[in-house]
Length: 73
Image: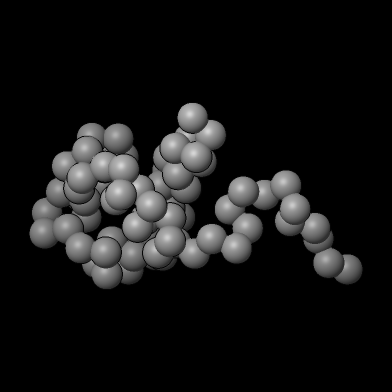
């Protein structure tokens, strides 16, 4: 049985899309201030951040929450 995702704002969004959206709104330093993750502070790059976020569920959740906050406001 398929579960409907029509009310899920993250449905169809990749982690890379989410991170790139946040980078259009905030610089790396600002992302670090909002989500205290070292990959946003020390030699930040999209590739290294994606690698970390894919391996770390709590960090991914924080980034997704910030994304949701940014599209709602």
